[in-house]
Image (cartoon, rainbow, N blue to C red; front, side, top):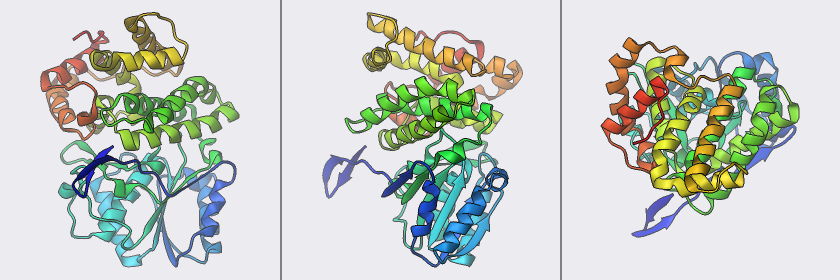
Length: 397
């Protein structure tokens, strides 16, 4: 990603200081140095499968006093974030440890911000790359249990303002965790539907990062390898193959490293904004929208999509044939994973669609991910893409 430093324009690539991965990577928590740790967790799955107990055990071995913040909801709200920040302020941790899917980790990142800067406002926080310097009070550990969001290695956090009916991606390198733990044992607990949705989220991350305006020669190899790994392993992981499930946990992490630095595009802009209105699971929304966005963007980056198709060994000799094959591959993956191909098939009524389409198109245009889309887009085009997604019509404009 391009930044300005000391009046000089240069590229920046940021990752967690340490990434612990592989079997029993969770035990790295024993090596932390500090006095107090807050653990942020979502629903009951991490407790039910014994991982929360392990985290507490390892932190106690590191001689830490522990405080739990439990029950972070899917698509965490501004209110949840502020409550968590208040608990942190009262407890005073020097480590924040977030475990679970994207929701508890994203919520914990935002809690961290407001713990360190209690007077900072959410309105200020949604300005991309405008956050104050973190790590004044605490460092951050992220432990992912799903194979898709990759928030354990990214500079993003997605928080929902339910009053405004808008999902906001907070984006700043400060939000990149200090330590990421990618332990495949946690991903083995995912049910098939979650495996499908998070896996297609990972594919969308990688494909969007590969063509984003902020992409680089450092992000490209990560994106490409993730695309290959996801194509080869997602369906097997969905069917319960343990080795494929382990590989998907690494693949999504690679995609996260790529998009955290290259940014994303309008597939994510649309997923953020429809998610807040229709509560479509994020990965499912990406899976539905991705083929339509590939067709829209091909006029600007068809050569790069064609290169992906070639690397994957898809059919075609011309650029158009290769891009068509890539679009078909994504649609075929959706079908294999029992994901609908249109908003209509998802269950959104025509009246519901018509009453919200302008609101969604307007806010998707303002989303932080839209600026990095390889092809510029206006309100009318965004609305037309949504209409194509609803009806299942190919994007040709």
